[in-house]
Picture 1 (cartoon, rainbow over the protein chains, first blue to last red):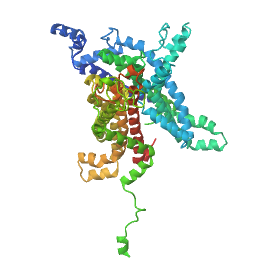
Picture 2: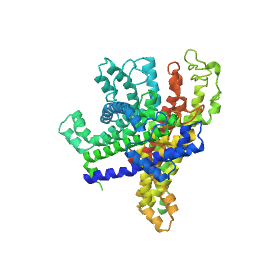
Picture 3: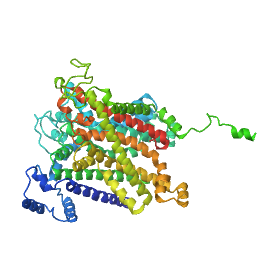
Picture 4: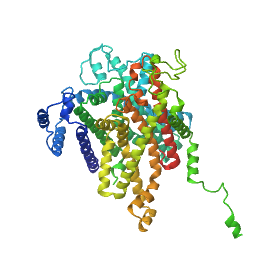
Length: 336
Length: 301
């Protein structure tokens, strides 16, 4: 087990270094050096330009610069935002709970709907239900989610007036930030109705963000289930006279879940990429919107730091899923 | 007796169908795949003959007919079947011309990533050792980043625009092709026909491109078809956030980029471009599934 852990962890080291190389070169590949970018249209005189470059350590050899960058990362120093003059890591830290809350709700919706849908489709293979579920999931998989969000706003916010268009909570409430998660903070505060307002704001963006993971989970559950349902032990269980729902939920599902869990883990990347689009449409103050705004404002230290942190999260989650997979499935662990 | 045997033509019903015939039989049995292929053909023809299909130009602004609703609604005009946008351009015309952009970007992304990916995959699979490890670690890094995020990073470096967006998307999908090619090359290399060819003195280039490559094509074709749909979807997303095709280019994604402003008064500006993206992507996915089943039943999920 220890050997397996060590092997898995060692694989991500080159990946991590590669990602830091990528974000390091990002800021140097953009036309114009950082000083010129900060100065903008005004420009700087050559003397000041050279002094600023030296101050930021940009006159040193690339390898030395990279070393400084790397050691900075391990000290939690990701640079300072050009626009707000705040450390990038602090900005990320304040905005991340909003994205986490949204992604968490989305993945819960995707699992709660996608898993049963996939199971039902597998059990009723070749019937109308199966075709409907598969058709819907292929549609969900092909969905441009930014448009899907606009459509839902058009229907539920503009036409029916049921849900708000943007933000995390209506402006009439003032909630102290304790955890950064609006649903928890509103419950902790004594503002009546604040929790419902937060929930109202969360529902549409969560559905939008859940769409693609839901489709993927439903498809994967169906195919894993179909495979398992053909196994002998399912036949035995049926032959012993157990009811079909019991066989499906107890015997088959446990074995079908292994590949499904992997797929759920892989959705983290999809969620974080989807958050860029979803947060932009719903003006959700999370890291997706922040990243895009930073690109538009040419705040490259923020872009650099944001991309690095998001990639690290994805790498870390994939590693966790990998290890978990090894724990539940000994065949993987002992593979040579 | 003997003569009769020699001249007898095999019964048509008993003869094995040719590879194309077999492919078509499988493919056409899949109704979804046929519908998908048909729709793609329709979009392709519309894109090719866009100038003949519509009397308007995608850039012409009819200032007297700003935000005209679709023709079946009250206030709609028959000149603009699907209405006009915020500066009075005909939406149907822009949708037809937008098909050109989406198919072009899909084509460019697939060609780029297929060509590069196959080359890199071939060299990794054939050379093995250090080259292989280096290439595969680089691919791992690309795979570790969500595709839209990596595309954003690359577009930030290259600057916004349709071609740059295509390059960025092509890079993000490179690992899929590299991995598929590498895996098939490794699997094929150990087979007897490759050894035979090598023993008879075939050079590296002949071995790789003429002996091995044709036998790795099936999964690559399937991946290319599915890659088309991903490319269209990602290009539209980049256009939507303003980093892909730049206005006034008629591209489906960028047509939606300021649609949020008009959502209260002009539903048609919001609805139709997205519908085109969805149906086209769906069509490519349906066709890709059909291709997968027809080319290699074993690959079926």
